[in-house]
Length: 359
Ligand code: NAI
Ligand code: MG
Image (cartoon, rainbow, N blue to C red; front, side, top):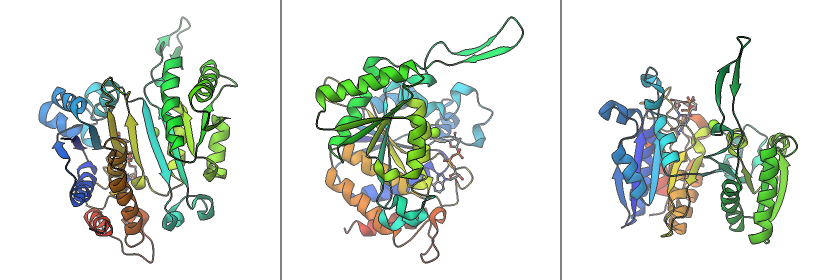
């Protein structure tokens, strides 16, 4: 039987996860859930944020549904035992190299955006960020002391052809099921890794994806274009650093962190299995944790992505997404409060989504 590993984590993680599981239960799927501890919750119980048992379960599961980890409670904890080390460890051990961050604006939510509603109404942008390489991991790195007594901090942007090829394939393949357009983003004008990035993405497209339109943009121009006219994009593929920044930028086209899901995919193995982790892009929101007011939509949409991507359950996934949109037209959590709509808590928001599933 298909098995999902459920890791709620800390802060609002367990609150929004409970909401997503209410929706999951209402779907009545024959999928087994396995719950376990991660992050600060695991550290408190077992002295490590990512117990070996949890890692082994993550490897064995068909997908991982993750909440959020971290919080001020663990501020004094050693660097590699911090709650956040859990998500980094999961990405590293499962080789989760392609981080997919959709920024979609439901028609009825365009007023919540930080941009003018007409710029974002109907927006459906997917950013594919390479998430295991680039300047965050490249060697050499470190802070070194120089003979004159000053210091020098060094990071190195490194990308190899296979690393670029595999994330390019994810983006190009995704575009086939969308509007058929990919924009590859780099700084090929000033960076060697960017030059290789551009050449390699183009070669993959020319070899295997001639039905997909590909263009290239410099990262600074792309940032400007996302604010100027975000609807011009379908799929954007980029490296770790630019993807980190551009996806946060794109997220604000939608209006609240509490709306945005993500998927992070690993390589397909010999048996055709692909490790994948799904999580909201927000963190554990300690400032609102425990009050039952967090917006659960990002977690519920992460569940929808999981159903579509890892379980191939397209119909329930679409049903969940439509139900979220319909529910948001009726009620809102405080982060999206609208003068003409009732403000509700996390659980009521989940109940509203369940009602709109039409079950
Ligand atoms: P955050 O995303 O937790 O919160 C930023 C702001 O957005 C806060 O004001 C929060 O109340 C609000 N917010 C976030 N999610 C919301 C939701 N669903 N509904 C309503 N409001 C929401 O980011 P912050 O404050 O920088 O980090 C808090 C903790 O979370 C830190 O320990 C950080 O390391 C951790 N974190 C964990 C992540 C993960 O588990 N993947 C990702 C990002 C941060
Ligand atoms: Mg970020």
